[in-house]
Structures are given as C-alpha cells and as structure tokens.
Amino acid sequence: MQFTSERRLDDGVLEREFTLEEIPGILWTPASVSPPTSASAPVPLVLLGHPGGLRRMYPRLVDRARHSAAEGFAAATIELPGSGDRPRSAVAEQARADLRRVLAAGEPVGDEIVDRLVLPLVEQAVPEWQKTLDALLALPGIGGPVGYSGGVIAIGTRLAVVEPRIAAAILFAGSFVPRVLFEEARQVTIPLHVLLQWDDEGNDRQSALDLFDAFGSEEKTLHANMGGHTGVPQFAGDAAARFLTRHLK
Amino acid sequence: MQFTSERRLDDGVLEREFTLEEIPGILWTPASVSPPTSASAPVPLVLLGHPGGLRRMYPRLVDRARHSAAEGFAAATIELPGSGDRPRSAVAEQARADLRRVLAAGEPVGDEIVDRLVLPLVEQAVPEWQKTLDALLALPGIGGPVGYSGGVIAIGTRLAVVEPRIAAAILFAGSFVPRVLFEEARQVTIPLHVLLQWDDEGNDRQSALDLFDAFGSEEKTLHANMGGHTGVPQFAGDAAARFLTRHLK
Image (tube, rainbow over all chains, first blue to last red; front, side, top):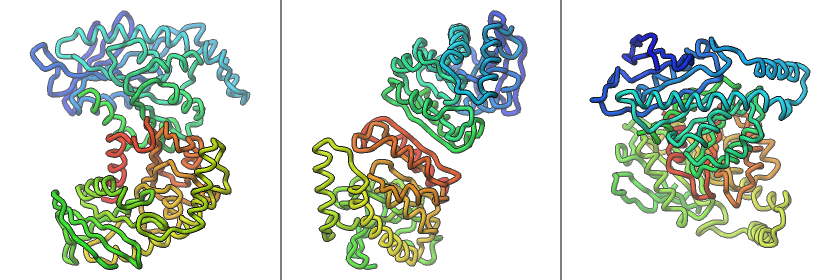
C-alpha cells in the first residue's frame, strides 16, 4: 500500500489517497488520531462501498467518511474493477451494452445478463477488498471491529459471507443480484441493516424483499423509505450510521 | 374527564387515571411539568395505542409513557371498546369466536370475518380517541403537536385520516386490516413510521407490505425486524421514539 497524497479536511479529518497493486483508494482517519500511530488506541474501520467511479462518487463518499470520523472510526474505499481509471473488461462492457439494450427495449432483465454483469465483478472485487483490509489493518492505530457500508449489494453479500473480520454491514438494495447470491445470503450471520428506496425505478422491490428474507442473520433490519435510488432521506442515513456505531463501538 | 387516582412514579412522572364518559384511561405527564399548569409551556402529547386490555398492557404502556416523558411529552391511553372492564359486544364476541374457529381449523381468514371483527371496533374507537383528545388538549399545559403510536393498525389508519390534530404516527403492522382501510390509507398524508415484525406468526407479511405501499404520505418509513409479534428489538423501539421526537419537537 502506497500513500500517494495527503490532505487535511476542514474538520481535521486526514484524507490520504493510496494505491494497492494498481488499485486506487482513499483512507480517512478521524482528526483526533490523524495520523493514527501505534501509540494511539486502535480505531474501528468502515469500508465504504459504492457503485464504481471514485471521482464521481467522491462527494458522497467524503460525506460518509466524515460521519464515520465523527464517531471515531476510520473509513476507506477502493475503486471497483472496470470503473474510474481502472482498465475496462471486454466481458463487462459487453454485458453492460446488452443490459442497456434490454432496458431500452423495455424487456425484463434475464438472469443470464445479471450473472454476466455482476458475477465477474463480485469475483474480482471481493478479494480486492480483502487485500485492502489486510493492508489497512496492518497500519498502526487502525484496528477493528470492521464494518462494511453500501455499494453493490452482491459484493456486500459475498463479503459478509467470506470475510470474518467484517462485524456488521449496511447494504443498499438496488443493484442486480445473481441467483447464486440468494443462496449465499442464507450463510450470512452478521448483523445487517438493509436500506431500500421503495420507489427506486432501477430496482426490483420484490427481489430486494426476497433477498432481505434470505439473509441468515439473527439481527437484520430493513429500512424502507420513499423516493428514488439516490433519495435516501437524511434521517435514514443517520439511522444507518447509528447501526454501525452500535456494532463497532 | 374525571381524574380518579394519581401517583408519582419513581422517575417523577405523574400518572393519573381518568374516566371519560365511562371509558377508563391513563395520563402521564413529565416530571418537569407535573402537573402541567396554564403557566407552564404546553407539552406535546402522544396517544398510546394498544390491542385492548389496559391492565394486561400496563407494563408496556407505562414503559412507553416514561420514554415519552423523558422527551418532554405527555402520553395518554384509553381502554378499547369491549376490552378490559368495558362491556363486551355480542357482535364482536361472535366475530372473535368465528376467528378462533377459522384459525384453529388452519383456514384462511376471510375478509368477511375481518370486517365483522375490526370495522365496528374502528367505528367506535376512533370517535372515542377524538373525544379523549378534546378533553386532554383542554387541560392546562398540554398542547400540541400530537403523535399517535401503536395499537390496532386499522384504528391508527382511520385516526390518521380523520383527525387533523395528529401530526405523525407510529403504526405496528400485525392486526387484521379490512379492505376498506386500504382505500383510506391512500388519504393519509402525515409522516408515518411503520414497524413490521418480519416473522410475526399472527401477521400476514404481504398484507402489511401492501398497506405500507398504500399509505399516501410523502414521508413514510418501514422498519422491519426479526422476531415475533412482541419481539420488537430495543433499537427498533428507540428508532420509533426518535421519529416522534423529530416530528413533535
């Protein structure tokens, strides 16, 4: 992990860009311990998921990172495979083109396209998040527990199954979910907080409810709110943050 | 409205039992303004719904009232028609017997039984809650805004339609809902916070989701949690209380 830039935000949060084997990422640490050292008490860490495109997503990511920092948590994110400055994959580009064509024609999106679109992404992204976690937890002053928040729900689901260091996860309903992930969802046991935008035009509500039902976690909560995909109300964001605080503190 | 008893709880909350035209009820006021006078700043009021049977429900009601009082709100409840010490209705008893028979036989509960069971209750209870509201708001030091919380969801829905003094409502999914209430739900415009116990054995989950969908409110939130009817987690109760605080303060 190479730090490539460093700046201090107006609220004292330290923002550092890094690369990890060509993958760009950002780490934010709270003002109180920035930079954290081996002498400071280790802070919990929140992995900030997103739909891809770090630059485009930056304003919302830094906002979520500041909220995490205010709770005393470090926060970090990495670029998704095939997004932002990372090389495109021919398979993914083809699947995306096929999806656009199906959506434009008003046809239902079949499992086959969803699998081609999402499964390679999950299979590449999840080990990258895990490698990032290795590197972040090796830094002085960053400890556990670790939370995961948002982004592509299929990635969050797989991570929650395979990564025992993740103690709790906030998931955003709204992306396409391959059938195999519904099976994996039954193996998830960590506390979950699922956000569903009830009128999300790009989201199949019933599929989101089915996935929520499938999760094996004893503690799982669904918060459904009005509005489209990006219209999560402030109070719902606050409630999600409270969930992580409850589990990471 | 006649106060019939008065006692001070250990946290200073003043609990007063009353009757209003034969209907028994309880009023709790915060320690800071107990009893409220015309000189004290008027406190918001929360109407505490319940499934009937004040004595049986008392432990949970007083707990909710204490939480309201801690926020600076008065809280009040009345007995439902046909419950507790109030006279039974032959029609309601017959409907209840028919429901028990249908449930015991494992048959689906038809609209006809639900209508016979719930509609007369709604039609009697709602004007009683309104009369109670008249009397409570005429007391010195009790003002608005008014919130409604819990109980039979059909009563809460009708109240939210017909009673403009109610500013926000918490509704518990879980009781039988006559079809006509789904139509009325579209007329509800106040902010709603709906609690759904995902594995509530006595509750039709799909019907609860349909009712949530039907509400006309621009701000409506569904919080679904694991567990049976009475297993609402502490954090979900806290979130519901936060909703009322946000709208009544």
